[in-house]
Amino acid sequence: MPDAASQPPFRPLAQKQPDIECTRKPDGTVYLKQRHLPGDRPRSVPHALAVRAGMHPDRDWLKQRNPQTDEWESITYNEGLQRTRALAQAFLDMGAGPDAPVMILSGNSIESALVMVAAMTIGAPAAPISVPYSLMSSDFAKLKHCFNAVQPKVIFAAELKPFEPALAALGDHGCSVITADGANGATSLNGLLDTAVTPAVDAALDALTDESIGKYLFTSGSTGMPKPVPTTQGAMCSMIGGVEGLRDDARDPEYDPDTPDNVLDWLPWNHISGSNVNFNGALWTGATFWIDGGKPTAALFGETIRNVLDCKPSTFGTAPIALAMLAEAMEENDELLHAFFANMRSIGYGGATLSDDLYDRIQNLAIKATGRRVPIITMYGATETQGITVVHWEVERVGLIGLPLPGLTLKLVPTMGKLEVRVKGETVMPGYLNLPEKNAEVFDEEGFYCLGDAAKFVDEDDPNQGIVFDGRVGEDFKLSSGTWVSVGVLRPDVVAACSPLVFDAVICGQDKNFIGAMFWPSPAAFEDYVKTAGGDQMAAFMQLNKDIAAKVAAFNAAEPGSSRRIKRFLVMTEPPSIDKGEITDKGYVNQRMTQDCRADLVASLFVDSPPPNVVQL
Image (tube, rainbow, N blue to C red; front, side, top):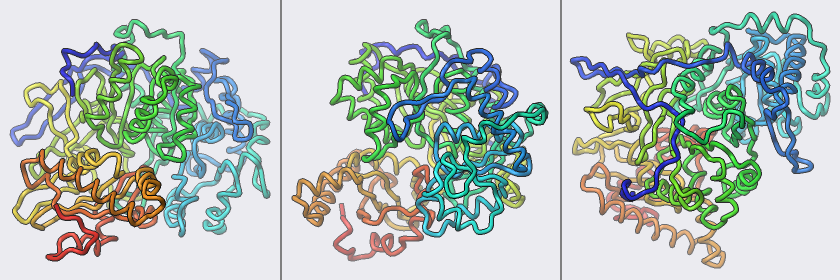
Protein backbone atom coordinates (compact mmCIF):
# COMPACT_ATOMS: atom_id res chain seq x y z
CA MET A 1 0.00 0.00 0.00
CA PRO A 2 1.18 3.59 -0.64
CA ASP A 3 2.45 5.67 2.27
CA ALA A 4 -0.65 7.11 3.99
CA ALA A 5 1.03 10.47 4.54
CA SER A 6 1.32 10.97 0.79
CA GLN A 7 -2.33 10.13 0.11
CA PRO A 8 -5.32 12.51 -0.10
CA PRO A 9 -7.61 12.55 2.96
CA PHE A 10 -10.63 10.31 3.42
CA ARG A 11 -14.16 11.56 3.10
CA PRO A 12 -15.05 11.63 6.83
CA LEU A 13 -16.98 8.57 7.99
CA ALA A 14 -20.07 9.71 9.88
CA GLN A 15 -19.44 7.44 12.84
CA LYS A 16 -17.94 7.79 16.30
CA GLN A 17 -14.34 6.88 16.95
CA PRO A 18 -13.57 3.73 18.99
CA ASP A 19 -13.87 3.88 22.76
CA ILE A 20 -13.38 0.34 24.01
CA GLU A 21 -13.45 -1.05 27.53
CA CYS A 22 -11.03 -3.97 27.70
CA THR A 23 -10.97 -6.44 30.59
CA ARG A 24 -8.29 -9.15 30.78
CA LYS A 25 -8.44 -12.24 33.00
CA PRO A 26 -5.40 -14.12 34.34
CA ASP A 27 -6.13 -17.09 32.05
CA GLY A 28 -5.74 -14.86 28.97
CA THR A 29 -9.46 -14.38 28.27
CA VAL A 30 -10.28 -10.87 27.04
CA TYR A 31 -13.64 -9.07 27.20
CA LEU A 32 -14.32 -6.13 24.86
CA LYS A 33 -17.27 -3.74 24.81
CA GLN A 34 -17.96 -0.23 23.57
CA ARG A 35 -18.34 2.60 26.04
CA HIS A 36 -20.69 4.13 23.46
CA LEU A 37 -24.29 3.26 24.31
CA PRO A 38 -26.84 1.91 21.82
CA GLY A 39 -28.85 4.56 20.00
CA ASP A 40 -32.48 4.84 18.96
CA ARG A 41 -34.18 1.74 17.63
CA PRO A 42 -37.69 0.80 16.50
CA ARG A 43 -40.05 -1.28 18.60
CA SER A 44 -40.16 -3.84 15.76
CA VAL A 45 -39.44 -3.96 12.03
CA PRO A 46 -43.13 -3.42 11.11
CA HIS A 47 -43.22 -0.50 13.56
CA ALA A 48 -40.21 0.96 11.73
CA LEU A 49 -42.19 0.97 8.48
CA ALA A 50 -45.09 2.70 10.20
CA VAL A 51 -42.78 5.35 11.66
CA ARG A 52 -41.10 6.10 8.34
CA ALA A 53 -44.40 6.10 6.44
CA GLY A 54 -45.64 8.72 8.89
CA MET A 55 -42.53 10.86 8.47
CA HIS A 56 -42.23 10.75 4.66
CA PRO A 57 -45.22 8.93 3.13
CA ASP A 58 -44.45 9.86 -0.47
CA ARG A 59 -40.75 8.94 -0.46
CA ASP A 60 -39.80 5.92 -2.55
CA TRP A 61 -39.18 2.92 -0.31
CA LEU A 62 -38.46 0.08 -2.75
CA LYS A 63 -37.48 0.07 -6.42
CA GLN A 64 -36.99 -2.79 -8.89
CA ARG A 65 -36.80 -3.24 -12.62
CA ASN A 66 -40.00 -4.48 -14.22
CA PRO A 67 -39.04 -7.74 -15.98
CA GLN A 68 -41.35 -6.99 -18.89
CA THR A 69 -40.57 -3.31 -19.55
CA ASP A 70 -37.08 -3.11 -17.98
CA GLU A 71 -38.17 0.20 -16.43
CA TRP A 72 -37.82 0.95 -12.73
CA GLU A 73 -41.01 0.57 -10.72
CA SER A 74 -41.33 1.70 -7.13
CA ILE A 75 -43.59 1.90 -4.12
CA THR A 76 -43.58 4.66 -1.53
CA TYR A 77 -43.32 4.19 2.19
CA ASN A 78 -47.05 4.83 2.62
CA GLU A 79 -47.96 2.45 -0.21
CA GLY A 80 -45.75 -0.16 1.40
CA LEU A 81 -47.44 0.30 4.75
CA GLN A 82 -50.95 -0.02 3.31
CA ARG A 83 -50.06 -3.08 1.25
CA THR A 84 -48.36 -4.89 4.10
CA ARG A 85 -51.39 -4.26 6.32
CA ALA A 86 -53.72 -5.74 3.70
CA LEU A 87 -51.46 -8.75 3.27
CA ALA A 88 -51.20 -9.13 7.04
CA GLN A 89 -54.98 -9.44 7.24
CA ALA A 90 -54.98 -11.96 4.39
CA PHE A 91 -52.33 -14.03 6.18
CA LEU A 92 -54.41 -13.96 9.36
CA ASP A 93 -57.37 -15.22 7.37
CA MET A 94 -55.20 -18.08 6.04
CA GLY A 95 -54.25 -19.12 9.57
CA ALA A 96 -50.75 -17.64 9.78
CA GLY A 97 -49.50 -16.50 13.15
CA PRO A 98 -46.73 -16.93 15.75
CA ASP A 99 -46.81 -20.72 15.40
CA ALA A 100 -47.66 -20.75 11.68
CA PRO A 101 -44.88 -19.08 9.64
CA VAL A 102 -44.88 -17.69 6.11
CA MET A 103 -42.22 -19.33 3.93
CA ILE A 104 -40.68 -17.34 1.04
CA LEU A 105 -39.10 -19.40 -1.75
CA SER A 106 -38.22 -16.73 -4.29
CA GLY A 107 -35.51 -14.10 -4.18
CA ASN A 108 -35.42 -10.37 -3.49
CA SER A 109 -38.33 -8.38 -4.93
CA ILE A 110 -40.85 -5.77 -3.89
CA GLU A 111 -43.36 -8.59 -3.50
CA SER A 112 -41.05 -10.62 -1.26
CA ALA A 113 -40.43 -7.55 0.90
CA LEU A 114 -44.16 -6.95 1.32
CA VAL A 115 -44.73 -10.59 2.26
CA MET A 116 -41.85 -10.55 4.75
CA VAL A 117 -42.99 -7.40 6.57
CA ALA A 118 -46.68 -8.40 6.42
CA ALA A 119 -45.95 -11.70 8.10
CA MET A 120 -43.99 -9.99 10.87
CA THR A 121 -46.84 -7.50 11.34
CA ILE A 122 -49.08 -10.25 12.72
CA GLY A 123 -46.29 -12.07 14.56
CA ALA A 124 -45.99 -14.81 11.94
CA PRO A 125 -42.29 -15.55 11.44
CA ALA A 126 -41.12 -14.96 7.89
CA ALA A 127 -38.94 -17.83 6.65
CA PRO A 128 -37.01 -16.78 3.53
CA ILE A 129 -35.35 -19.84 2.01
CA SER A 130 -32.22 -19.93 -0.11
CA VAL A 131 -33.40 -19.90 -3.75
CA PRO A 132 -30.93 -22.61 -4.87
CA TYR A 133 -32.64 -25.06 -2.51
CA SER A 134 -35.66 -24.83 -4.85
CA LEU A 135 -34.12 -24.09 -8.24
CA MET A 136 -30.65 -25.68 -8.24
CA SER A 137 -31.08 -28.80 -6.14
CA SER A 138 -31.68 -32.24 -7.60
CA ASP A 139 -33.19 -33.84 -4.50
CA PHE A 140 -34.68 -30.80 -2.67
CA ALA A 141 -33.35 -32.31 0.58
CA LYS A 142 -32.46 -28.96 2.14
CA LEU A 143 -35.79 -27.41 1.12
CA LYS A 144 -37.70 -30.30 2.67
CA HIS A 145 -35.55 -30.06 5.78
CA CYS A 146 -36.31 -26.33 6.15
CA PHE A 147 -40.03 -26.89 5.55
CA ASN A 148 -40.24 -29.62 8.18
CA ALA A 149 -38.28 -27.53 10.66
CA VAL A 150 -40.65 -24.54 10.69
CA GLN A 151 -43.96 -26.02 9.44
CA PRO A 152 -45.28 -22.98 7.55
CA LYS A 153 -48.93 -22.21 6.88
CA VAL A 154 -48.33 -20.01 3.82
CA ILE A 155 -45.79 -20.31 0.99
CA PHE A 156 -44.92 -17.44 -1.36
CA ALA A 157 -43.11 -17.63 -4.70
CA ALA A 158 -42.95 -14.75 -7.16
CA GLU A 159 -43.70 -17.08 -10.09
CA LEU A 160 -45.26 -20.51 -9.86
CA LYS A 161 -43.73 -22.30 -12.84
CA PRO A 162 -40.03 -22.29 -11.79
CA PHE A 163 -40.99 -23.48 -8.31
CA GLU A 164 -43.49 -26.17 -9.26
CA PRO A 165 -40.95 -29.05 -8.94
CA ALA A 166 -39.90 -27.79 -5.51
CA LEU A 167 -43.51 -27.48 -4.33
CA ALA A 168 -44.26 -30.95 -5.67
CA ALA A 169 -41.29 -32.31 -3.71
CA LEU A 170 -42.94 -31.07 -0.50
CA GLY A 171 -45.85 -33.43 -1.13
CA ASP A 172 -49.21 -32.75 0.51
CA HIS A 173 -47.94 -29.69 2.37
CA GLY A 174 -51.36 -28.22 3.23
CA CYS A 175 -50.17 -24.63 2.78
CA SER A 176 -51.80 -21.73 1.01
CA VAL A 177 -49.60 -20.98 -2.00
CA ILE A 178 -49.35 -17.35 -3.09
CA THR A 179 -47.67 -16.08 -6.23
CA ALA A 180 -47.41 -12.68 -7.84
CA ASP A 181 -48.99 -14.02 -11.01
CA GLY A 182 -51.67 -16.23 -9.42
CA ALA A 183 -51.01 -18.97 -11.99
CA ASN A 184 -52.40 -22.52 -11.98
CA GLY A 185 -54.68 -22.16 -9.00
CA ALA A 186 -52.26 -20.30 -6.74
CA THR A 187 -53.63 -17.31 -4.86
CA SER A 188 -52.74 -14.00 -6.52
CA LEU A 189 -50.75 -11.60 -4.37
CA ASN A 190 -52.25 -8.63 -6.18
CA GLY A 191 -55.74 -9.84 -5.31
CA LEU A 192 -54.83 -10.00 -1.62
CA LEU A 193 -53.82 -6.32 -1.64
CA ASP A 194 -57.55 -5.48 -1.68
CA THR A 195 -58.19 -7.35 1.59
CA ALA A 196 -60.15 -5.22 4.07
CA VAL A 197 -58.09 -4.67 7.22
CA THR A 198 -59.80 -5.47 10.53
CA PRO A 199 -58.76 -4.45 14.07
CA ALA A 200 -57.13 -7.87 14.37
CA VAL A 201 -54.09 -6.59 12.46
CA ASP A 202 -53.47 -3.74 14.89
CA ALA A 203 -54.05 -6.08 17.82
CA ALA A 204 -51.43 -8.50 16.49
CA LEU A 205 -49.00 -5.65 15.80
CA ASP A 206 -49.50 -4.25 19.29
CA ALA A 207 -48.77 -7.68 20.78
CA LEU A 208 -45.24 -7.77 19.34
CA THR A 209 -42.44 -7.74 21.91
CA ASP A 210 -38.69 -8.14 21.81
CA GLU A 211 -39.23 -11.89 22.26
CA SER A 212 -41.53 -12.16 19.22
CA ILE A 213 -39.90 -14.21 16.47
CA GLY A 214 -39.70 -12.08 13.36
CA LYS A 215 -37.93 -14.52 11.07
CA TYR A 216 -36.57 -17.99 10.85
CA LEU A 217 -33.23 -17.62 9.10
CA PHE A 218 -31.34 -20.78 8.28
CA THR A 219 -27.62 -21.20 8.65
CA SER A 220 -25.79 -21.72 5.39
CA GLY A 221 -25.45 -25.46 5.85
CA SER A 222 -21.66 -25.33 5.83
CA THR A 223 -21.49 -28.00 8.56
CA GLY A 224 -24.48 -30.18 7.62
CA MET A 225 -28.16 -29.44 7.13
CA PRO A 226 -29.16 -25.78 7.63
CA LYS A 227 -30.11 -25.01 11.21
CA PRO A 228 -33.22 -22.87 11.92
CA VAL A 229 -32.38 -19.70 13.83
CA PRO A 230 -35.28 -17.87 15.53
CA THR A 231 -34.50 -14.22 14.87
CA THR A 232 -36.47 -12.08 17.30
CA GLN A 233 -37.70 -8.54 16.86
CA GLY A 234 -35.47 -7.62 19.78
CA ALA A 235 -32.40 -9.07 18.07
CA MET A 236 -33.04 -7.26 14.78
CA CYS A 237 -33.89 -3.95 16.41
CA SER A 238 -31.04 -4.13 18.91
CA MET A 239 -28.62 -4.37 16.01
CA ILE A 240 -30.21 -1.24 14.56
CA GLY A 241 -29.70 0.39 17.96
CA GLY A 242 -26.07 -0.68 18.01
CA VAL A 243 -25.42 0.87 14.60
CA GLU A 244 -27.28 4.03 15.64
CA GLY A 245 -25.13 4.23 18.77
CA LEU A 246 -22.07 4.74 16.58
CA ARG A 247 -23.70 7.26 14.27
CA ASP A 248 -22.19 10.75 14.21
CA ASP A 249 -23.49 12.67 11.21
CA ALA A 250 -21.67 15.82 12.30
CA ARG A 251 -18.34 14.24 11.29
CA ASP A 252 -19.39 14.47 7.64
CA PRO A 253 -20.23 18.11 6.84
CA GLU A 254 -21.62 17.10 3.45
CA TYR A 255 -24.26 14.84 4.96
CA ASP A 256 -27.79 16.17 4.43
CA PRO A 257 -30.40 14.43 6.63
CA ASP A 258 -33.16 15.63 4.30
CA THR A 259 -31.68 13.78 1.33
CA PRO A 260 -32.49 10.07 1.52
CA ASP A 261 -29.74 7.55 0.96
CA ASN A 262 -29.87 5.38 -2.13
CA VAL A 263 -29.02 1.78 -1.25
CA LEU A 264 -28.35 -0.62 -4.14
CA ASP A 265 -28.13 -4.21 -2.99
CA TRP A 266 -28.30 -7.77 -4.34
CA LEU A 267 -27.44 -9.71 -1.17
CA PRO A 268 -30.15 -12.33 -0.55
CA TRP A 269 -32.72 -11.80 2.18
CA ASN A 270 -32.36 -15.32 3.55
CA HIS A 271 -29.11 -14.17 5.22
CA ILE A 272 -28.49 -11.50 7.83
CA SER A 273 -26.31 -9.26 5.64
CA GLY A 274 -28.95 -8.65 3.01
CA SER A 275 -32.00 -9.00 5.23
CA ASN A 276 -31.22 -7.67 8.69
CA VAL A 277 -28.22 -5.41 8.09
CA ASN A 278 -28.99 -3.82 4.72
CA PHE A 279 -32.77 -4.12 4.32
CA ASN A 280 -33.72 -3.36 7.94
CA GLY A 281 -31.05 -0.67 8.21
CA ALA A 282 -32.27 1.09 5.07
CA LEU A 283 -35.86 0.93 6.33
CA TRP A 284 -35.01 2.49 9.69
CA THR A 285 -33.00 5.34 8.13
CA GLY A 286 -35.72 6.07 5.56
CA ALA A 287 -33.50 5.20 2.59
CA THR A 288 -34.67 4.24 -0.87
CA PHE A 289 -33.77 0.60 -1.40
CA TRP A 290 -32.94 -0.31 -5.02
CA ILE A 291 -33.22 -4.06 -5.54
CA ASP A 292 -30.30 -5.12 -7.71
CA GLY A 293 -31.06 -7.99 -10.05
CA GLY A 294 -27.36 -8.39 -10.79
CA LYS A 295 -24.88 -10.66 -9.07
CA PRO A 296 -21.07 -10.94 -9.05
CA THR A 297 -20.96 -13.43 -11.92
CA ALA A 298 -19.78 -12.94 -15.48
CA ALA A 299 -23.33 -13.40 -16.75
CA LEU A 300 -25.11 -11.05 -14.34
CA PHE A 301 -22.69 -8.34 -13.25
CA GLY A 302 -23.56 -6.21 -16.24
CA GLU A 303 -26.97 -5.72 -14.63
CA THR A 304 -25.32 -4.31 -11.50
CA ILE A 305 -23.32 -1.89 -13.66
CA ARG A 306 -26.52 -0.69 -15.36
CA ASN A 307 -28.15 -0.21 -11.97
CA VAL A 308 -25.21 1.75 -10.56
CA LEU A 309 -25.53 4.18 -13.45
CA ASP A 310 -29.19 4.79 -12.57
CA CYS A 311 -29.01 4.64 -8.79
CA LYS A 312 -25.76 6.50 -7.96
CA PRO A 313 -25.69 4.81 -4.55
CA SER A 314 -24.83 6.52 -1.27
CA THR A 315 -23.43 3.35 0.26
CA PHE A 316 -22.46 0.07 -1.33
CA GLY A 317 -21.84 -3.23 0.42
CA THR A 318 -20.95 -6.48 -1.29
CA ALA A 319 -18.43 -9.33 -1.52
CA PRO A 320 -14.80 -8.64 -2.53
CA ILE A 321 -15.29 -10.54 -5.78
CA ALA A 322 -17.96 -8.01 -6.79
CA LEU A 323 -15.71 -5.10 -5.85
CA ALA A 324 -12.98 -6.58 -8.04
CA MET A 325 -15.37 -6.80 -10.99
CA LEU A 326 -16.61 -3.28 -10.30
CA ALA A 327 -13.07 -1.88 -10.10
CA GLU A 328 -12.19 -3.47 -13.43
CA ALA A 329 -15.31 -1.98 -15.03
CA MET A 330 -14.67 1.49 -13.57
CA GLU A 331 -11.07 1.46 -14.78
CA GLU A 332 -12.46 1.19 -18.31
CA ASN A 333 -15.63 3.30 -18.01
CA ASP A 334 -15.47 6.88 -16.72
CA GLU A 335 -19.25 7.27 -16.81
CA LEU A 336 -19.59 4.34 -14.41
CA LEU A 337 -16.74 5.67 -12.27
CA HIS A 338 -18.38 9.06 -11.75
CA ALA A 339 -21.85 7.57 -11.24
CA PHE A 340 -20.54 5.21 -8.56
CA PHE A 341 -18.68 7.89 -6.59
CA ALA A 342 -21.15 10.77 -7.16
CA ASN A 343 -22.89 10.22 -3.80
CA MET A 344 -20.71 7.52 -2.24
CA ARG A 345 -20.17 7.91 1.50
CA SER A 346 -18.61 4.52 2.27
CA ILE A 347 -18.01 1.11 0.74
CA GLY A 348 -18.56 -2.08 2.72
CA TYR A 349 -17.38 -5.61 2.12
CA GLY A 350 -17.85 -8.96 3.84
CA GLY A 351 -17.69 -12.71 3.42
CA ALA A 352 -13.99 -12.71 2.53
CA THR A 353 -10.84 -10.65 2.96
CA LEU A 354 -10.18 -7.71 0.67
CA SER A 355 -6.72 -7.86 -0.91
CA ASP A 356 -4.26 -4.96 -0.57
CA ASP A 357 -4.13 -4.68 -4.35
CA LEU A 358 -7.89 -4.31 -4.69
CA TYR A 359 -7.99 -1.80 -1.83
CA ASP A 360 -5.40 0.34 -3.60
CA ARG A 361 -7.23 0.12 -6.93
CA ILE A 362 -10.51 1.25 -5.37
CA GLN A 363 -8.83 4.16 -3.58
CA ASN A 364 -7.09 5.23 -6.79
CA LEU A 365 -10.47 5.24 -8.50
CA ALA A 366 -12.03 7.25 -5.65
CA ILE A 367 -9.21 9.81 -5.89
CA LYS A 368 -9.66 10.05 -9.64
CA ALA A 369 -13.40 10.66 -9.28
CA THR A 370 -13.51 12.82 -6.14
CA GLY A 371 -9.99 13.92 -5.24
CA ARG A 372 -10.04 12.00 -1.97
CA ARG A 373 -10.23 8.50 -0.57
CA VAL A 374 -13.41 6.69 0.45
CA PRO A 375 -13.85 4.82 3.77
CA ILE A 376 -13.82 1.08 3.11
CA ILE A 377 -15.33 -0.77 6.05
CA THR A 378 -16.66 -4.18 7.01
CA MET A 379 -19.04 -5.83 9.47
CA TYR A 380 -18.56 -9.28 10.93
CA GLY A 381 -21.33 -11.49 12.23
CA ALA A 382 -23.29 -14.71 11.87
CA THR A 383 -26.86 -15.87 11.34
CA GLU A 384 -27.03 -16.69 15.04
CA THR A 385 -25.78 -13.30 16.24
CA GLN A 386 -26.63 -10.60 13.66
CA GLY A 387 -23.80 -8.12 13.21
CA ILE A 388 -21.18 -8.39 15.95
CA THR A 389 -18.31 -6.11 15.07
CA VAL A 390 -17.89 -3.23 12.64
CA VAL A 391 -15.05 -1.06 11.36
CA HIS A 392 -16.48 2.36 12.24
CA TRP A 393 -13.45 4.53 11.60
CA GLU A 394 -11.24 5.33 8.61
CA VAL A 395 -8.53 2.68 8.29
CA GLU A 396 -5.38 2.51 6.20
CA ARG A 397 -5.37 -1.28 5.92
CA VAL A 398 -7.58 -4.24 5.08
CA GLY A 399 -8.33 -7.36 7.09
CA LEU A 400 -9.88 -5.75 10.16
CA ILE A 401 -13.24 -6.96 11.44
CA GLY A 402 -13.56 -3.93 13.69
CA LEU A 403 -14.85 -3.69 17.24
CA PRO A 404 -18.10 -4.78 18.92
CA LEU A 405 -21.31 -2.86 18.35
CA PRO A 406 -22.65 -0.93 21.36
CA GLY A 407 -24.67 -3.25 23.58
CA LEU A 408 -22.60 -6.36 22.83
CA THR A 409 -19.74 -7.96 24.75
CA LEU A 410 -17.05 -9.77 22.81
CA LYS A 411 -15.14 -12.52 24.58
CA LEU A 412 -11.80 -13.74 23.21
CA VAL A 413 -10.78 -17.08 24.69
CA PRO A 414 -7.32 -18.67 24.28
CA THR A 415 -7.85 -21.82 22.18
CA MET A 416 -5.26 -23.87 20.26
CA GLY A 417 -2.81 -20.97 20.25
CA LYS A 418 -5.41 -18.44 19.07
CA LEU A 419 -8.16 -16.27 20.52
CA GLU A 420 -11.58 -17.81 19.82
CA VAL A 421 -14.44 -15.32 19.30
CA ARG A 422 -17.55 -15.50 21.49
CA VAL A 423 -20.34 -12.95 21.91
CA LYS A 424 -23.20 -12.09 24.24
CA GLY A 425 -25.96 -9.52 23.91
CA GLU A 426 -29.48 -8.76 22.75
CA THR A 427 -28.71 -9.52 19.10
CA VAL A 428 -27.78 -13.14 19.83
CA MET A 429 -30.35 -15.87 19.17
CA PRO A 430 -32.05 -17.60 22.11
CA GLY A 431 -31.10 -20.95 20.56
CA TYR A 432 -31.72 -23.03 17.46
CA LEU A 433 -35.32 -24.15 16.95
CA ASN A 434 -35.90 -27.58 18.53
CA LEU A 435 -32.20 -28.46 18.69
CA PRO A 436 -31.45 -28.62 22.45
CA GLU A 437 -28.30 -30.74 22.09
CA LYS A 438 -26.81 -28.33 19.58
CA ASN A 439 -27.73 -25.37 21.78
CA ALA A 440 -25.82 -26.94 24.66
CA GLU A 441 -22.74 -27.10 22.41
CA VAL A 442 -22.71 -23.54 21.11
CA PHE A 443 -23.15 -21.55 24.33
CA ASP A 444 -20.42 -21.49 26.97
CA GLU A 445 -20.78 -21.49 30.74
CA GLU A 446 -21.29 -17.70 30.80
CA GLY A 447 -23.95 -17.73 28.08
CA PHE A 448 -21.66 -16.50 25.30
CA TYR A 449 -22.30 -17.85 21.80
CA CYS A 450 -19.21 -19.57 20.38
CA LEU A 451 -18.62 -18.74 16.72
CA GLY A 452 -15.67 -21.02 16.06
CA ASP A 453 -13.70 -18.14 14.53
CA ALA A 454 -10.46 -16.69 15.80
CA ALA A 455 -9.29 -13.07 16.01
CA LYS A 456 -6.20 -11.17 17.04
CA PHE A 457 -5.46 -7.57 18.02
CA VAL A 458 -3.89 -5.13 15.62
CA ASP A 459 -2.04 -3.85 18.69
CA GLU A 460 -2.20 -5.78 21.98
CA ASP A 461 -1.58 -2.56 23.89
CA ASP A 462 -4.25 -0.53 22.09
CA PRO A 463 -7.57 -2.38 21.62
CA ASN A 464 -9.06 0.73 19.98
CA GLN A 465 -7.10 -0.17 16.83
CA GLY A 466 -9.42 -3.13 16.36
CA ILE A 467 -9.16 -6.84 15.79
CA VAL A 468 -8.32 -8.92 12.72
CA PHE A 469 -9.89 -12.18 11.55
CA ASP A 470 -7.49 -15.03 12.31
CA GLY A 471 -9.18 -18.01 10.65
CA ARG A 472 -11.62 -20.67 11.81
CA VAL A 473 -10.40 -22.71 14.75
CA GLY A 474 -12.01 -25.90 13.39
CA GLU A 475 -10.44 -25.61 9.92
CA ASP A 476 -6.84 -25.22 11.07
CA PHE A 477 -4.61 -28.28 11.06
CA LYS A 478 -1.07 -29.38 11.88
CA LEU A 479 1.55 -30.62 9.47
CA SER A 480 3.52 -33.73 10.41
CA SER A 481 6.17 -31.38 11.84
CA GLY A 482 3.65 -30.07 14.37
CA THR A 483 3.41 -26.72 12.59
CA TRP A 484 -0.07 -25.19 12.61
CA VAL A 485 -1.63 -24.11 9.30
CA SER A 486 -4.19 -21.31 9.59
CA VAL A 487 -6.55 -22.21 6.74
CA GLY A 488 -8.86 -19.23 7.21
CA VAL A 489 -5.94 -16.85 6.68
CA LEU A 490 -3.94 -18.80 4.08
CA ARG A 491 -6.86 -19.61 1.77
CA PRO A 492 -7.94 -16.01 0.97
CA ASP A 493 -4.32 -14.91 0.73
CA VAL A 494 -3.38 -17.53 -1.86
CA VAL A 495 -6.65 -17.00 -3.77
CA ALA A 496 -5.88 -13.28 -3.90
CA ALA A 497 -2.35 -14.06 -5.07
CA CYS A 498 -3.78 -16.17 -7.91
CA SER A 499 -6.38 -13.60 -8.91
CA PRO A 500 -8.05 -13.44 -11.39
CA LEU A 501 -7.34 -17.03 -12.41
CA VAL A 502 -9.04 -18.84 -9.49
CA PHE A 503 -12.19 -18.11 -7.53
CA ASP A 504 -11.59 -20.35 -4.49
CA ALA A 505 -9.32 -22.99 -3.00
CA VAL A 506 -9.29 -25.94 -0.62
CA ILE A 507 -6.21 -26.16 1.60
CA CYS A 508 -5.03 -29.70 2.44
CA GLY A 509 -2.22 -31.31 4.41
CA GLN A 510 -3.36 -32.49 7.83
CA ASP A 511 -0.59 -34.70 9.28
CA LYS A 512 1.32 -34.42 5.98
CA ASN A 513 4.83 -33.10 5.33
CA PHE A 514 3.67 -30.10 3.32
CA ILE A 515 0.61 -28.10 2.22
CA GLY A 516 -1.34 -28.96 -0.90
CA ALA A 517 -4.11 -26.96 -2.54
CA MET A 518 -7.03 -27.67 -4.84
CA PHE A 519 -8.17 -24.70 -6.93
CA TRP A 520 -11.38 -23.94 -8.74
CA PRO A 521 -10.63 -21.87 -11.83
CA SER A 522 -12.46 -18.64 -12.48
CA PRO A 523 -15.05 -19.42 -15.19
CA ALA A 524 -14.48 -16.05 -16.84
CA ALA A 525 -10.71 -16.51 -16.83
CA PHE A 526 -10.93 -20.02 -18.27
CA GLU A 527 -13.28 -18.80 -20.99
CA ASP A 528 -10.63 -16.24 -22.00
CA TYR A 529 -7.98 -18.97 -22.11
CA VAL A 530 -10.18 -21.11 -24.36
CA LYS A 531 -10.69 -18.19 -26.74
CA THR A 532 -6.95 -17.55 -26.85
CA ALA A 533 -6.35 -21.24 -27.56
CA GLY A 534 -8.75 -21.16 -30.49
CA GLY A 535 -11.31 -23.30 -28.70
CA ASP A 536 -8.84 -26.00 -27.64
CA GLN A 537 -9.92 -26.63 -24.02
CA MET A 538 -7.05 -28.98 -23.21
CA ALA A 539 -4.45 -26.45 -24.37
CA ALA A 540 -6.27 -23.73 -22.44
CA PHE A 541 -6.31 -25.86 -19.29
CA MET A 542 -2.60 -26.61 -19.54
CA GLN A 543 -1.72 -22.93 -19.98
CA LEU A 544 -3.99 -22.01 -17.06
CA ASN A 545 -2.12 -24.49 -14.86
CA LYS A 546 1.22 -22.98 -15.88
CA ASP A 547 0.08 -19.46 -15.10
CA ILE A 548 -1.39 -20.48 -11.74
CA ALA A 549 1.90 -22.24 -10.97
CA ALA A 550 3.79 -19.00 -11.62
CA LYS A 551 1.49 -17.08 -9.27
CA VAL A 552 1.74 -19.70 -6.52
CA ALA A 553 5.52 -19.76 -6.88
CA ALA A 554 5.62 -15.98 -6.48
CA PHE A 555 3.40 -16.27 -3.41
CA ASN A 556 5.67 -18.94 -1.91
CA ALA A 557 8.77 -16.81 -2.53
CA ALA A 558 7.46 -14.19 -0.13
CA GLU A 559 6.61 -16.73 2.60
CA PRO A 560 9.39 -17.77 5.00
CA GLY A 561 7.73 -20.74 6.71
CA SER A 562 6.18 -24.10 5.82
CA SER A 563 2.83 -23.04 7.29
CA ARG A 564 2.31 -20.65 4.36
CA ARG A 565 3.91 -22.35 1.34
CA ILE A 566 2.00 -24.46 -1.19
CA LYS A 567 4.18 -27.34 -2.45
CA ARG A 568 1.66 -29.06 -4.74
CA PHE A 569 -1.67 -28.13 -6.26
CA LEU A 570 -4.25 -29.28 -8.77
CA VAL A 571 -7.05 -27.51 -10.62
CA MET A 572 -10.51 -29.01 -10.28
CA THR A 573 -12.86 -29.24 -13.24
CA GLU A 574 -16.03 -30.19 -11.33
CA PRO A 575 -17.67 -27.18 -9.65
CA PRO A 576 -18.53 -27.29 -5.94
CA SER A 577 -21.85 -28.98 -5.10
CA ILE A 578 -24.55 -27.41 -2.95
CA ASP A 579 -26.34 -30.76 -2.56
CA LYS A 580 -23.19 -32.43 -1.21
CA GLY A 581 -22.53 -29.53 1.16
CA GLU A 582 -19.27 -28.49 -0.51
CA ILE A 583 -20.46 -24.91 -0.91
CA THR A 584 -23.26 -22.84 0.54
CA ASP A 585 -25.52 -20.44 -1.32
CA LYS A 586 -23.43 -17.61 0.16
CA GLY A 587 -20.39 -19.02 -1.62
CA TYR A 588 -18.70 -20.35 1.52
CA VAL A 589 -16.63 -23.44 0.73
CA ASN A 590 -16.73 -26.14 3.40
CA GLN A 591 -13.10 -27.21 3.47
CA ARG A 592 -13.63 -30.48 5.33
CA MET A 593 -16.70 -31.58 3.37
CA THR A 594 -15.00 -30.88 0.04
CA GLN A 595 -11.98 -32.94 1.06
CA ASP A 596 -14.25 -35.78 2.17
CA CYS A 597 -16.20 -35.70 -1.11
CA ARG A 598 -13.00 -35.53 -3.18
CA ALA A 599 -10.82 -37.80 -1.11
CA ASP A 600 -9.20 -39.30 -4.21
CA LEU A 601 -8.05 -35.87 -5.39
CA VAL A 602 -6.70 -35.02 -1.94
CA ALA A 603 -4.79 -38.30 -1.81
CA SER A 604 -3.25 -37.63 -5.23
CA LEU A 605 -1.58 -34.48 -3.86
CA PHE A 606 0.48 -36.47 -1.37
CA VAL A 607 1.48 -39.72 -3.10
CA ASP A 608 5.16 -40.28 -3.77
CA SER A 609 4.69 -40.14 -7.55
CA PRO A 610 1.78 -37.77 -8.17
CA PRO A 611 -0.28 -38.00 -11.38
CA PRO A 612 0.18 -35.50 -14.25
CA ASN A 613 -2.68 -33.24 -13.07
CA VAL A 614 -0.79 -32.44 -9.86
CA VAL A 615 1.61 -29.50 -10.21
CA GLN A 616 4.75 -29.68 -8.06
CA LEU A 617 6.57 -26.50 -7.04
